[in-house]
Image 1 (cartoon, helix red, strand yellow):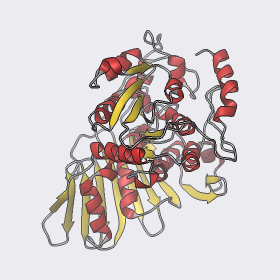
Image 2 (cartoon, helix red, strand yellow):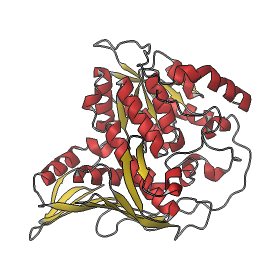
Image 3 (cartoon, one colour):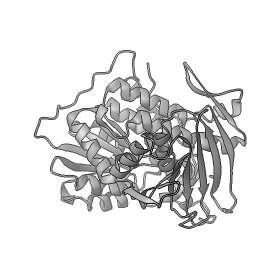
Image 4 (tube, one colour):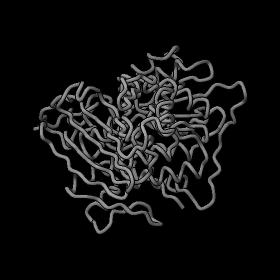
Length: 430
């Protein structure tokens, strides 16, 4: 899409996409009792392709009817993952998905800088939304998405699938009932080995790829292989580093287990201690979120392999009568003076997908395991960690009628939002 077309599109859709003070009436077909959920996946890279498989295998009451990506190679590969590849629509522009009244729900597994914009527009088009983590590229987007979800009353599931793991649900309930005594601190641990990506020069985008549309809200920049496919995570224009990529899973479980919402402060630091390449985001972060009576500690090291400290990526809750570990090996409690005891398994993506499908079919956002309100609270902690790293000082967090702000810190407050490229602005709430 060229610049002229972007401007024309923005003008022609400004009225349709603006949220007025009165609820927008959207046209959608009501799901009859025996109807299947007609689902589309927008963004079919690694996790998006996983969505195609999981939704396709979810049962007869759900059908993946369309896949969408700016990359034709990925569209073809994703369609091939469905039971009837020839019947799946392969779409290059997400707006054609949202325009289709036959689509009941969408997954959004694009790069982070597209998540909130597409999710809000999908809600306005009457779709239920499963949005991958983090739900937003910045705090202002997340606040807008939460408001839009409330305005339109559709299901918005956040892709933090640990909330659908039966073992984790059980372990957290037992902890809150006193399993390890009074819990005053938790660690969210993200340590793994992410390889160096090197330094590369600009080159033409792959044939058939709509690179301008891929950039979307982000500033114009020449195509490079390091800003493409998975490596976009490591550039501030598109991604949120590993705090928003993998660390958000551990942050979400820690916040959930502690029963906390927004911290009053974030103290810490982040740096590149290992990378010397095209990475912009840190490979090392240590941030303490102060919830007054409880602390949530985020530790990220991307230059060490599993396992460390006796466990893999996951969480440790510290009580005065023991500790609870939640990781990829499941949930293990160790009470003082007792042997470790396994309580159950860990994360469950299939159950998370199933929960979303059931709620969408019932048109019941109240049944979601990871509603967007909770998803945004956890995503905001990832953003606080990154802003702390970028400005190099503690953040003191306040809420007012305008939303989240940092006290006496204009530089940090500028990072609560971003500049949007013409034609790719967010819809506005009335």
